[in-house]
Length: 235
Length: 359
Image (cartoon, rainbow over all chains, first blue to last red):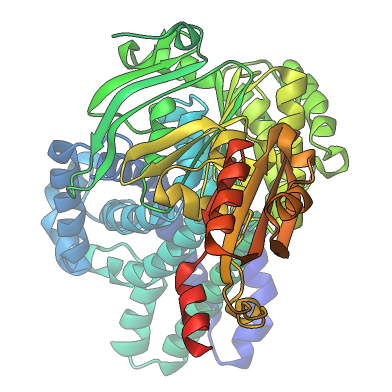
């Protein structure tokens, strides 16, 4: 339905740059796949990454509940995921992907490694944003008899919110880039379309369109994120 | 543990506190003090003297290595986590940098301790509505801290500290980030609230002016120890330790500028010249000591500088006198003045020496 409507809307534009209706359909389909992979992975990354970041922060030596036994291994895993090239991570965790997604091929299957990479990525960004919260404010909350959980929920997270939103923006933008590699496991998406048609079939107009769409996509994400960060900041 | 009768009913009683940081710094070295209910007790010291650590041990933001911490009769160190949190709700704290939540409005900041304590929304709102006018911020309730001046931020900090109706208020350099005028405002507010709400206030500061303005008693800290404590009037008028004297001098400065000394007339033949600092405290401050001494001992007494001040409603005066006359009569006059209960000290003898050499 939405694709039909978009197709109708964009057809004159596609004609203008010599893109056939078939290719336009492929492009729309690929854009949908990218959105799905990026959106799904980001959602999982935020949901898993925030508690992970809070845990990393709280168990750090100067945190609310210092605990080396938790902090060190957790930090190690996060770093390991972050330092593994995404293309390698994607194939390395195929058994896990199959376990979770039921298959190792397709858009859904590509979302699994994307979500894992994004979670590790965003956890560090979140941790940094949370660490920025004024220690004095945390101390004030302690002096008022707040529990550690209350401090995290009512002080640290709300105070860091603008920074957290900025971290989500950066992660989304990075995910758009990562998702281009999803073609390796048949995940589709805009990047995959660009490679298969633009590069392998020598169709520069497809490549150019893909690149322009991606640029617009990233621009939109960044602007939205910046606007939201400003809205939330009362400093 | 021995405790005097006065200490028995103390609102805050600290005894034998010791704290050494991992870095090796001794922040507290056997500190003991008792704050009586309803009094404003000041702790003054330079940065690094340990006063910040001391005030933070009262609500156990900092745990002492040894010693006792009692607040309102409660042994703080004996409490478990939940008990400590409950006790902390009965101790308000105000901070140098205000430590407000930038993401919350004024009203929501003040409501924070109530929210933490689990009060229902309606009660929180009622309490905030009471507190806002108390600190003069009724029309700022929906502003964010970033939109407030320093003084207004501290008013929010004070309202927040008082939200859960504490009996004890800790002020951690509460006015150190404020300009002199705002400082005076905030200090007046603290004293006012103490009177109205029957609070016990423990404050730390590096400014003796703060102590002079609102404290009843004061302790002077240096290198983790309390080197002097007593009624503010006594400490100001009769400081014992060198550090205390330096602190006192900041507020009731009585150093005579060298230029002034240089311009003093030379002593005549057979005369001596002495520069004396005379401190009047209590009832004798109203007597015209200078003219009487002049007559009685036939001396010329020049008032080089002088001021009359009040500490805690008690008058005191401080002046620098240049005395001209035979040395032994100056000595006699000095003794006579001391006999009246005045504090007489020879002032800056080095300055005098240089002047005499030049002559």
